[in-house]
Image (cartoon, rainbow, N blue to C red; front, side, top):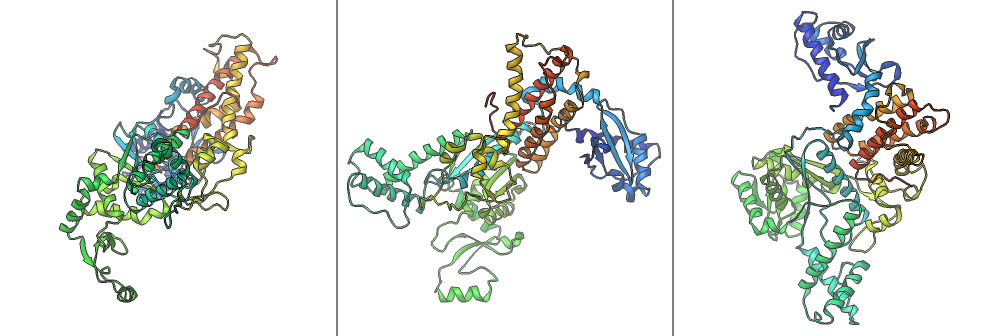
Length: 569
């Protein structure tokens, strides 16, 4: 089912073209036509300000244009009326008979209700989490995990073939430090006097890993260097990460090691390609550096040049280092090579989910792709603010953090997912632990899921009273009242909500809408009974079919957010 605003847009366009063809309106290029849900009930269900936008190109008053649109508007079975309102709005009311029949349409669609075919099966990739395997996932990483997984769900709902990817680096100084930290913990487990290295990883998780290692190898590794410890820690921590993510319903299709772009030499190939196109130079300071930067370099006696990317030629405010003066690449160079690898794997759309501290890196990678002639528009970056947990400051190295496992243990998978989604990615998120633990309508997760539970309870009651499973089949839906119609109208918004969230990379929109849906449902539930002595059988059967439809919609929206739909609470 196409979103209703899209269907109305198409009909408005047909009406304008028909009015132009018979001379009621002059010929002009049609702008983009907006159709929005009505803000007030007396305005109908949807409205469009299109006549106001056309006043200048048409050279007519908005009301006259609106009248012309109404006059030429095609017949549509889902619309009851087309109305004109000053100063030139065109409003639309849905047919109540059509709305009632959508109960059966939604039930028949089931788990596909609302799906779109925007991607036409093309390949998309979403990269998220991408934490190096140095420790358990803390809640600071959780927001990107839930955002990325839900974005992948949205792409799939909109017709893309999606691959979830985890990018990591198991080399470099951090991993050396991890190996030396585990070695110290291992020696301590054997009763040796060993100290953690300076700035080493202090978390208790390494004590646990060290005990597991001792149980496997005894004292055989006492004289080993840091390397086998690093490999052991990496394997154990990655297993922890995968297990933890599975607890919130996240499973990756592919893990990509940064080392690959070094092994296949693509990092250095990217550098030489940028050099051949005139985007690379070597200098102690950037070209056009300010005097204070030059003074600083002289005072620090910097003489060895770094390798710079002339990103200013592509709109950047300053050039960026891609290889440090010690010969080590910055994050940018392997990331450009990695994104070239992604494009080479045939992905037509790539979404990267990063914390806001990666904004400069993401922009520089995009400019690097552009410099090399790749279509950087295929890459979208979703930046999210970090999560705080009261006064807790999270650091894997310092061992001062709340893990995702801790959070799941306290509040459960569904609460974690919803609370991480329930604010826009660019908004700060302070996780409200007390509200998250509540089992009441104050907790939005409980409130949404309880709507599904109530639907299931009705069907259990029908079964207990001995009615057949298909008792509501063929029910007379014309008996449904205003309350049920209000909920059906809300349910019919799911396709447009999906498209909006997809187009704007805004999964929080689905979380907002799910709560709104529950707010329409719960007051209705108290009034619209099924098995009650005062409810005639025909009406009971119609209402039962209504609740069957409502259950489908709640399962759908919870599933899109990666949450479960419990039958009892």
